[in-house]
Image 1 (tube, rainbow, N blue to C red):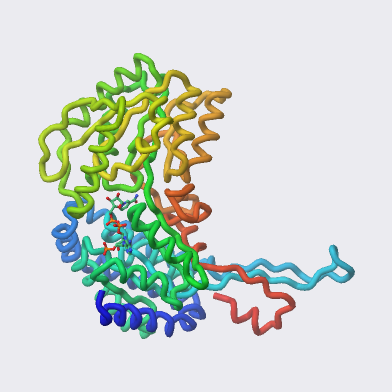
Image 2: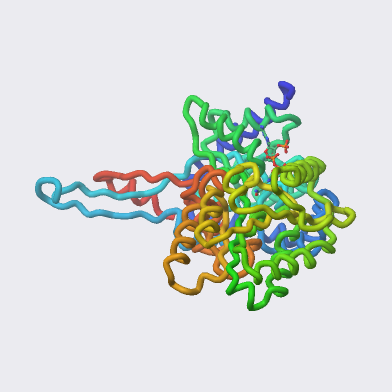
Length: 471
Ligand code: NAP
């Protein structure tokens, strides 16, 4: 990191700090117009951007086309939230005469934008969680300027999207500091950004090691700031025999597709499959192996991610009492899928078996009883999703399983596979550490904008103060 790199970061943050009061006070029309303008410019330049993204990430045209559509949908969705007045909502308690506790002053609870947000783009969503992705859209909707830390896995795409965004901001005559971007040549740059006194919050999606290092830096500041980080998830799936017996091949095919989707580089990729010792489970495991083994994956996002996957899979393969369920086929453009198996007893005893393998691999955990399956699920601790197949009966064992799933996960699925996260009001994409460093918040869905607003109670405020808080 050179002094001039730090100077560039300082300049970007200074611009954001200058835009802070203007953007915080902007009304609904100004904000939603910007969000819609950003969606339009992405779509208008989709062909060129998809070409760039494919060259840098290898994710393929079909997936990237879908991702641009999702990103534009997300930006427009947040524009609608702003138009509906969500960031400007307030709660009014009228004054009551008399002595407390019944008597009280007038109180109005409003929310104010936190200020400039440092947003670390994700490698695995070059549109939907990068320069104009969900974190940026939700922070802008909340009234916070955004300083993007571009991901080194797709630098040209980041620059192209940022240039388009800057054009929209200039045409709408908004301060340039509403959206700035930094590219750092070293890790020190990221740390400098997180510790910059004018940065008010951080949004991060990436590795456990990187996220934890930055989270620590955010907390070591003289004045620590909120750090909304997504650091990893193993996304367990518990499949009970009654569900598997119905359609073992269909379910195996769906699960194999989910494990290998995007070469397993989804934060919600299923990595742990908990099964009971039962003939229906044996049949399912055989089908899963048959479906998984021949799948050809595309190249991984970066060399670092590929070597990280190989190391993680090799560590699982080497662990005591772990069995590889098939010899992986020869690698193609991406690594060959892998499937391992271990007893629930070992899985519970050895925490290394619960580490994320970011790539096309999963581990089957075999439990001797529903009780043991529930314990294996509980051992996972924190995850974005938990999927339960076959808990339709309202009995005590199923209740315990659901209770544990709710304890460890931000989203519990009772059908289907965890990849694919809908952008809605009810969505929750988070969960206990390490799924999220702030488990009561979500990074996907419209509730994501709540992260960047801080409540203030105004007591006996004059009318002009309250009028200034309207959207
Ligand atoms: P990453 O290495 O954590 O990088 C994410 C961002 O943080 C990048 O901008 C990176 O800078 C920065 N960064 C990382 N460590 C830092 C540090 N110590 N100090 C300052 N800045 C730091 O994540 P990645 O490159 O996306 O992927 C690496 C691994 O992360 C994957 O193999 C996978 O295990 C995990 N991952 C998980 C998810 C998930 O959703 N669960 C998503 C993506 C990745 P540079 O751009 O300069 O590297």
